[in-house]
Length: 614
Image (cartoon, rainbow, N blue to C red; front, side):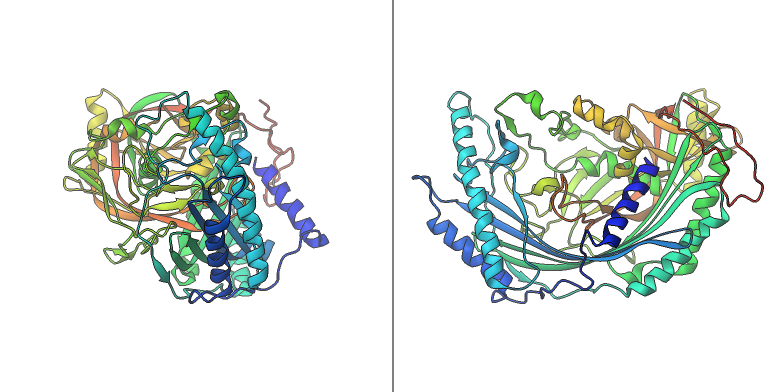
């Protein structure tokens, strides 16, 4: 997988070099809209208003709602390996997402799967717009998009009506909530940094791994996004929200003597270049990452086991992120009016596991969880996902998600569900242009936490109580998107409609803790079995101290080939370390690959390794 990605990147670079793919050398030509007279906003308003009033075909009514979101994006990306630049480019995009609805707020063509759903008005239309602030060009693009989407929307509406002539609509939620209109124009935030300066920094960072010949593949990636999100809809909402995000990432890969592939990742998201750590701190973190990998290569492989597990630091944040945060969007499953098996690859066959926990105990009763997009900081640290309005133009609200351990509420977009009829300002665009309730700043706190030292003691005590000689400490877990890549059967499981639990909580750095002495022993190639939200109710203790972790949400507005590869959404999680009463540990069974026949040329001692097959 690692080698395949490298080949793809090389191929893309060759295309650029050959001039087969053109990239702008400067930023996009469009200016930041300051009011409704800007050509981008005016063109959108004029064409949406005309369509709402006049667009009719064969007696069908005009749309009752049209929403158009436009994202202007300037992207800088630099990649380096072993002290050399692999990629350095600037890209500019202006993409639109059209949400056109026929019918009414109560019943329209959406949330229904028909024979031709993936080429119909059921799916928001994503399209490119002119980079220039040219009223005529922009309006023509919007006109064609509206015409295309309207024709398919009325066809899909007829199919949905026909289906419900023979099926009950009892308890069917409305399709779109009514919300207050807003007019909001925010000022420019930050602009892209100097490309040459960051090329020098990324080169220096990537050179570090030359000191660790055990690491076969390493890469440093710097991405900066200067963007502006504009929203115009037929209800009267006009919103312009610029934003700036930056990410510094490191990826490394090494291979043990038995052929097992080992990975590690570093991801530092920020909303300003000035918030990226200085060189000294970055060097320190990269060296620690490499030294840990060196130790993992020498460690014993994990064996099948059942024992208490303590999640610490970044691993605790991923624990809550993957089990709780990823499931907090209010679930609504589309009605399928055709052969369901055709859509298995695309439909989530596993309903939201939190549905069965509404008003039931999910976490220890001393823990409360809130999500607050209006909060800018926590105990002197910046929270990276604060905003006034969400991506649908709804004011962000502080929400109590868990109260005294009891799960109270999902986070909502404007798509009503049986759990909520209104939005609470947590919408973020997901793949294919749909909006979904998503966390912003998630705060997980309790009043019965232990000190870090006492939490380790609690782990050892729990082991002794269960008659075990050891437990486990996990300090690093792969992000969910990475976990999917590490699971070679993920695609085939998805095609078969199987659960993806095996791709959750993929541990990277794991220690076995001796219950008697407290001694730590590093183990590698571990995985967890039977991972699910029920683990949240099996937390037996947690730390008094909480820490802040921020995550980039990859590709929120793209997916399935639509739109630029944006990574513009960032969420923050404030959480404690957690001790889980018991978990099933397994040796990772991913297929082992052949080691290179010749040793890494950076090795001083050229020792021919053994060849390991399947």
